[in-house]
Amino acid sequence: MSIHFSQLFWGLLLVILDFSINGIDLLADGVGYLIVAAGCRGLSQLSKKFETARMFCFALGVLWLLGFAVRGDFAILYGLVTMVVNCAMIWRLLGGIGEFAKSRQRQDLADRASNRRVAYVAIMVSTSLLAVAMQGSQNVGPLAIILIIGILVLIVMILHLIHRVKVELAT
Image 1 (cartoon, rainbow, N blue to C red):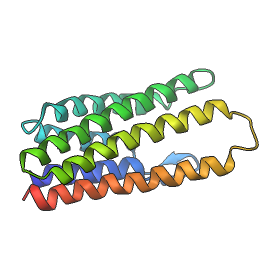
Image 2 (image 1 turned 30 degrees about the vertical axis):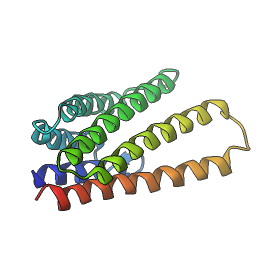
Image 3 (image 1 turned 30 degrees about the horizontal axis):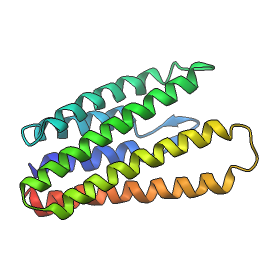
């Protein structure tokens, strides 16, 4: 079981990190989504939420591939669909982690999973709304920086939670 939580951790880390040269991402997000899907498959007996998260990972992998062909007017719709599926995947993934933590009498970790999934969706929706509302505006800088820092901190907190659940509950 520990290895499956490691797959969640490393797969999400691979998706989050973006190293690119001339616009080519050296760390393929699609591979990261497949690694997360493998981790979810191994954890699906703990919660059905992991199975749903796995399906969303496959959808994100397909969307990642489609992203190479998306241009022009479809880019906004593509970004919105990707964000919604990504939020749904994180929601179900952290929901599964919360159920697992509860089953091991670790309400503290279950509460953290619940809080982090709410925060993730709230920040992602806020960022998307800000991007649409402030499109072309010169005044978006400070608020955008705050949201970017907030999402980076939250992602680190999610990865830390996955690591703690792996170390404290899955061994």
